[in-house]
Image 1 (cartoon, rainbow, N blue to C red):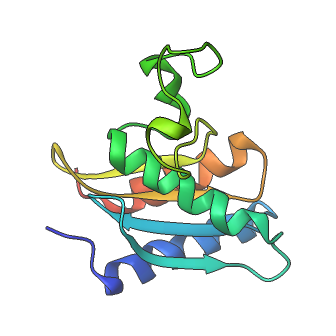
Image 2: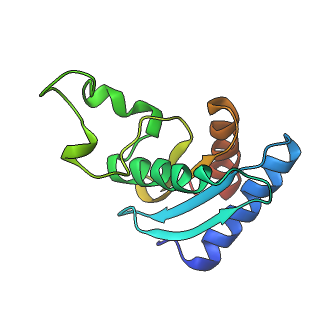
Length: 136
């Protein structure tokens, strides 16, 4: 299974619905299993930087096959020559919470990134969407 544009639209619709329910104005990014952007949506009144941050979170979750907030386990980017640094990867690498892989069984088929609320709100939206997909 791959994430199609149709599926990405369904993911975004579900994310927007949940975001509105909790009063969040955010941007939502959906990427395929390689981190390539499939769809990106900015809700009305969401701050402009949330667009790139949502994409960064989704890319990171897909590239590392784990939640964006778990990336620090691979190293401490604050220490010289130790662990992960954006310069070793690309500008999309982030450790900010709000990016989750999307799985079909054990296979990672893509990821979602949400930005606009608190880290907890962004994660809650991602979790609600992934749970609603019922792919596992």
